[in-house]
Image (cartoon, rainbow, N blue to C red; front, side):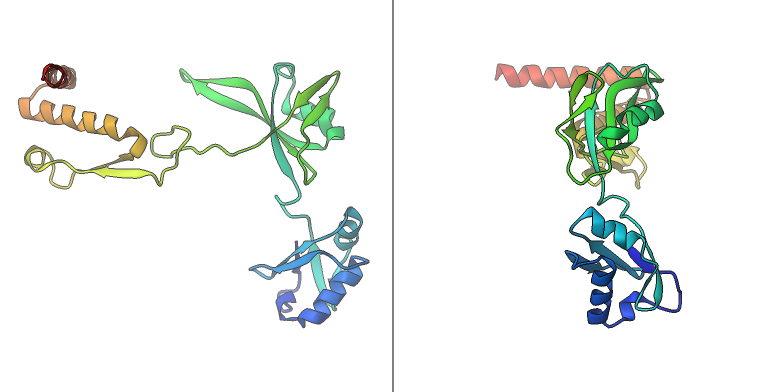
Length: 234
């Protein structure tokens, strides 16, 4: 990534032919590609580490002072390992031991169960290389590295595997609207729509019969069981 450090001079306003020549000269050879980004940035793709190092030491292009830095994500890969053999090590110690394997960051996955945080045996490793290794040497062990795929987590129900955008709005029926607030509606995940409908039905029974939640839930379950019995006998 490169950008001008002078607010009054933009790389985007330079002659594209002269700028391309200046970049290739700074890299000591023609680079793969230059992409024009927003906010006065240019994305440079090189052929080799030598070209990258040459560009990182460049301070100006066509008389314009520039700052060239590695891209935050395109120059790295992330993988997942699962092992019990690192459970007594901190993330910092794991990075230090696996630095020779290209590991520059480590995050141990944590889960919450019964209000307690539990450390799992799954680790997300960030490598300072473009190609993810299939295995890494971990002392005398060879551990398989799997591709890291970010988990989808719904911000509505806090469950994994689907996204907040998958929603269904459940409106009370006309009869229910008599007993419920006229503006009441339920916005729930499609994956939890059945549970939401059951909750609405129990609330309706509670309001109509003026009983608490547990008796209303029991009455609704009894009603559902009777319907199921009749449908099976016919």
